[in-house]
Image 1 (cartoon, each protein chain N blue to C red):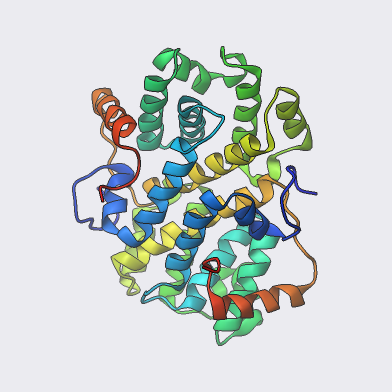
Image 2 (cartoon, rainbow over the protein chains, first blue to last red):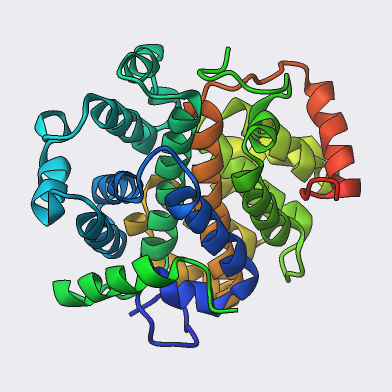
Length: 179
Length: 179
């Protein structure tokens, strides 16, 4: 049961965005720009970074949601997402994505954990400054969302089919609330 | 030196907001609503929560900036901010604020670290659901900002006078970029 009385039965972040629309609006806009806005990283790659960091933070709702979204938008599907979550270093993703995932894992620990070597590695694998920037901000943003969702003890459904359906809705409608 | 080439010499978060205005706008709006929007927590109290979490994350730029903002808006000034940062439990703040700071410190560790007892303690000290919500989200938000600022190795000036001047500007103009 959530720590506070929400005004809907919606699980995870959804109930929180509805409870406090003044903060919900910029939070939704941030997710939309970072995960779906114009970028040289695919939407699937960005959802994978979000899922990976959420899993490192043990946030069940966010890791399930973004794993489903990544799986629906990556050729490797859920099998690939599970490989990355289990051991990103050995997963069959590009050298660039592997280097960006390593930066995301450092950010999950602390901003101070990111090393110049990790940045140089990402750049050597072809990552641009903007891709490095967005990776750091996606990882940092999910360190926020994960703490927000679990810090208020919101509900996280068990049924994977619910997250898969949510991913299809998200792919069609995006993260912004209906106008 | 920052890990990526920014388009200004502005330190900390300011250079990042300018570098990527698409994400800078919702981030600025989030800070404005949370730290300065209508609330039963004073602006000084909210800045104190931001400063406290930023100090726990060892983020020099954010802890210096928000300590200066809190000091300028709290009766106890910088002496009080330093007491809270050194040992919040024994600092001369209200029982309610002390309970909210304890929740913020738990969020800094992980959302999963917040206990039902901490929530009950805050409520017993007079905190409302919305105050608990905003405390969790402020703490989570600074876990993001701190990682963003340090994960890209942005510059943090040493001179306390610069942060004090920044706080005066912030108090007058707020967090939103000029229209």
